[in-house]
Length: 180
Image (tube, rainbow, N blue to C red; front, side, top):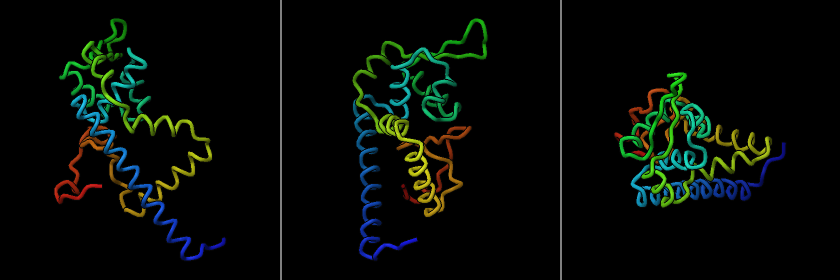
């Protein structure tokens, strides 16, 4: 295996950090715009955007489309339902099946809120070739190892929620003022 000249290696490291900064900045910008326009979190807007494309949809199918654990999506839907943005309907034939749809208020809200980073990321990742997806995944796994956070439940972007059963965790970094 060939090694890079030190100047080239330094440039590659700078490029990785600059690209991470760009990603964090755009995710933050999209989430802030969505919050300002609709008063919703990024994950809530993301769920509503998916619902606008495919409702009525079963909660489990919505979770699969969002690549989130169903209990995480239920928490998002609970808050949206409290705000009158969505409605859930239990199947008459099978009471275990629940579908979710946007209300009129939800359709109005979703028409006003801008696109969000999660949706753009998901669309882009789904369009990658298998090889490019594996390369991106391995690179991010290595960054997680470098930061020593392999066991950390994955938080949703700019949200206190995490993608695990139970929905929320106590983030030790939030007590010390540290945020990724």
